Image (cartoon, rainbow, N blue to C red):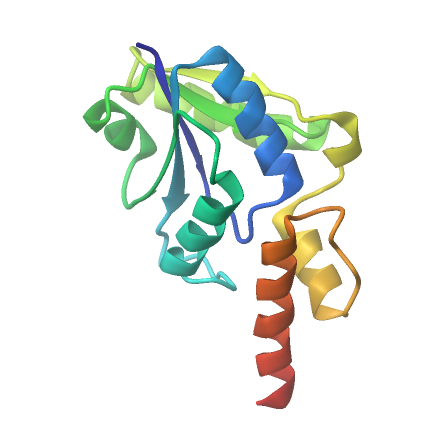
Length: 163
């Protein structure tokens, strides 16, 4: 049984992330979506909130688990018997950073491959930072994120404005 880890901050999860996840589940028996707990990174949603949003987004998708991790993703992958890390590539601008990370992960864990998957072209311009900014400005983002994520963003930014 082949297991892959799909790590990220997912702040919040987008339809582009879900597209990459669906591509990964076509290649692997199990995909573990892992939410990075990085105290140095400023996020809009807490790790627990991000996990809940992802779990709702992947409800009904078999062979997908959602977990948080703290530390090196290759250690998490080993602990969970994963043979691969899944990373999404939207544009050439993503490649340099992802390539460096893949090489470092290969150095740390030569037994774990990094698999790059490209989302559908309609998602190539999407990233969580853009989604957060659009939501902050009150833009309808339902074509970019699941409806429950849009509602969570609206609620988060309504609180920010009122208080």
